[in-house]
Length: 349
Image (tube, rainbow, N blue to C red; front, top):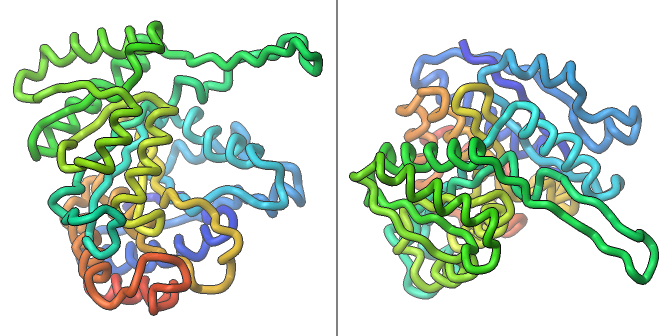
């Protein structure tokens, strides 16, 4: 019996989560596992009404669950950063979800903006450190409000944090069993303190994995190669901010935010799975948003829980739908409504 905490969140989040849960129900019937869900209202509407986001008691309760399934956070009526920090980052840090896992996989070449690229050319995974770096929120202002003002934002990297991320990446590369190639993406030529640490740890850990081929690419070069030669990549490991940037580019080359899912992973604890497209408030309530990313997040969640056959069935169903009747992956232009796309995937499983 899996206990799934469900956070619909803001905007179109509850809509796409509903379709993901529809697919989860069908997968459970087909593959014989049991689960129960509980909804948690960590949303902009609740914040505006009560001033509450995620507190320590919420975190304590979530630690009792098998996984967290998140729709989206972000409300246009709330100042940017409040909900994102008070919900998404709060949960990542409090649940020690130190890995952000982002598969970048093209399901239909018609949806790729790159010329002549096929599904076999775009199939890699980004392992992003998810608990340190510049998103740690450390820094200060000096002489704030004056012409001499200085804003300092610190990229905080610990040996422990860097090493556990890199070890996860090596293990994942070995388990993925594609080309067993792991690329370190950084900026060693300029960011000489943080990336000296990353490079040293990467090279030390690599000695323990002689079956894994390693290489290095600057982050700016990585963005270039994503566009020109995405087939070069198998698994990429990088820090928090670089991972945030390159995974959005990865989403675009795999067909857009409508198909991109991610996992916030604590290998020893509770992990959280979500579509990465955001709350898309302008589409709220119109039944036109693409739910495939949220459904892919369910597949990732099932794989993380050990239900690998069910996870593969979900992905296979998404591939069939993406290569079937959908005109595009864009909201409002798919040729089907949100609920109809969810029905199509559920029926195929």
